[in-house]
Structure formats: C-alpha cells, structure tokens
Image 1 (tube, helix red, strand yellow):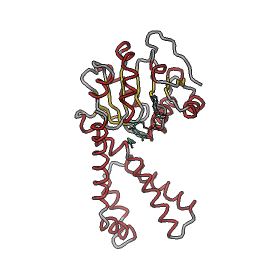
Image 2: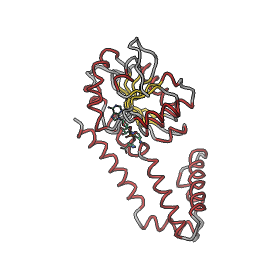
Image 3: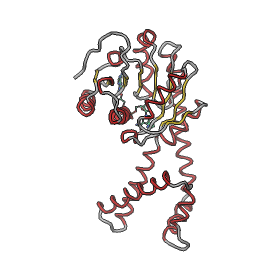
Length: 281
Ligand SMILES: NC(=O)C1=CN([C@@H]2O[C@H](COP(=O)(O)OP(=O)(O)OC[C@H]3O[C@@H](n4cnc5c(N)ncnc54)[C@H](O)[C@@H]3O)[C@@H](O)[C@H]2O)C=CC1
Ligand SMILES: O=C(O)[C@@H]1CCC=N1
C-alpha cells in the first residue's frame, strides 16, 4: 500500500529513497533501536518489497521518491548508483524548496555529483554502511561536504550510530577504499564461510555439521578480534602449533598467494567505486 504525505512543513521524518537490501538493513536497525516507525518514509517502486517493509517494520511506504521525500527533513538516498542521477533530477525541485540533509549510501557517487544533480548548495553526507547494520553490528564510513554544518554532521552520525559505530573520513577519495573494505567486506566473509563449509563436506562432514562448525568458528574468531586487545597476527599465532594442523593450512594459504589475492580483490573493488563515479558524470 502506498500513501500520500501531507505537503506541510518538515515533520522530522526520515525518507529512504529506495527500499532494497541496504535500506532494509538500516531501517530494521533503526526501528529496533527505538526510531518511530511513523517517522520513516520509504520510496520503493517494487510493491512486494514495499509491502514487506510496511509489514515487518510498520514504516510508511510510497511508490515514488517525491511522495516519500515531501515534508521529510532527512533523505537517505539508497538506490543503485546507476539510477541516482535520474532519482536526484526528480527530487531537485523539492530539494531546493525543503533543503533537507541529504545522506547518500551509494557506492562511488560523489558529494559534488549529488549536490549538482539536486540543484546545488545542499548539505550532503556520504555514508558507506554495511548489511550487518540489520543486527546493529554494522560499521559506517562518513564524509560530509562543506555545506554540512556541525549539527547536520552530528545528525547524520547519530542516525548511522544506531546501527553500529561510525568513522569520519576527511578525504572523500578514500570513501572508495571504505566501500571496498567494509561496505563489501561482509560478502568476503560469506565467501570464506561457503568455501570452508564445502571443504568440510569434502572431508566427510555432514552439511549441517559443517555449517554449524563454520558459523560458530567465524563468530568466535570475530568476537576474539573485537573483544581482546590483541592484533590478528598474535591471535593467529596462538592457534598455530609448530608442525601442527593450522601450520599446514596457513602454509597452503600463503603458498597460494592468499594475501596478494585479498589485496587485488580490494583494489578491484576500490577501482570499481571510482568507475561508478566516472560512469555517472
Ligand atoms: N548491499 C550492500 O551491502 C550495500 C549497498 N550500498 C549501496 O546502497 C545502494 C542500494 O544497494 P542495495 O540495497 O544493495 O540495492 P537494491 O537493488 O537491493 O535496492 C535498491 C532499491 O531501489 C529501488 N529503486 C529503483 N528506482 C527507484 C526510484 N526511482 N525511487 C525509489 N526507489 C527506487 C529498487 O526497486 C530497489 O529495491 C547502492 O547505491 C549501493 O551502492 C552501500 C553499502 C552496502
Ligand atoms: O556491491 C556494491 O556495489 C555495494 C556497495 C558495497 C556493498 N554493496
């Protein structure tokens, strides 16, 4: 179901433009941390996604960006980079009339591009969250343009802080590296989980047993990394008995160029961020 907003003055509402995977993670995290559902508007043209957001979080769904953004004083732009220019063109008129705080989570698209497409002179914050935000354990890199005042920076950080810690990035060009490390990062861990599970099954484990062993191992290792004040290499050394099983595995990883492969993968993701910006000029 879509709704018609009242065309009145700012409501304190947050408008999500795009209600896909990442918006859903952010909305779920915000609602579970006490954000009023009535104060969350979501523009999502796909009816099934819109209905699911309304059903699961009781937010207010709209079938177009203009309807959701009207009256909201914070806009979270959560569409794909490839459609961002056309979505901003649609919103430019009300952006200039309402002068919202604009927060974009799109990979690659720069604050200058967003500001230009929305008519100029706006406070624009780029945020790069990740999907663990859904469970309140995300992390977000933030960059603010020069039109963003201290209050608006605090507001943006406060919103993203609800779903995990935030890190301010001073040099916007580094946002592509943030995207490559933490924005995309959960997928790398899921790939590792897939590979470890498959390898466990290949060594004779039942699929369910392999899944349980991998899941808890990743949780345990991540918990050690975050709770103990010790670097990853020290924790790794403690698992690695000389001449033991871990050493056999680590030597195989190293011989296969694991570190270089990770470096190349993250460089490729960083470069793709730059390309997304250039492709949408
Ligand atoms: N998925 C992730 O882990 C992360 C994604 N991002 C960024 O978040 C943005 C969205 O990514 P996803 O959620 O993964 O994509 P998605 O495809 O799941 O969501 C985008 C949504 O925008 C909707 N949409 C398309 N045109 C629209 C319009 N004119 N008005 C309103 N909604 C419209 C689509 O129907 C779709 O549901 C991207 O820019 C991406 O770079 C950032 C951090 C992490
Ligand atoms: O894959 C992507 O382009 C988006 C940005 C970071 C995570 N997902």
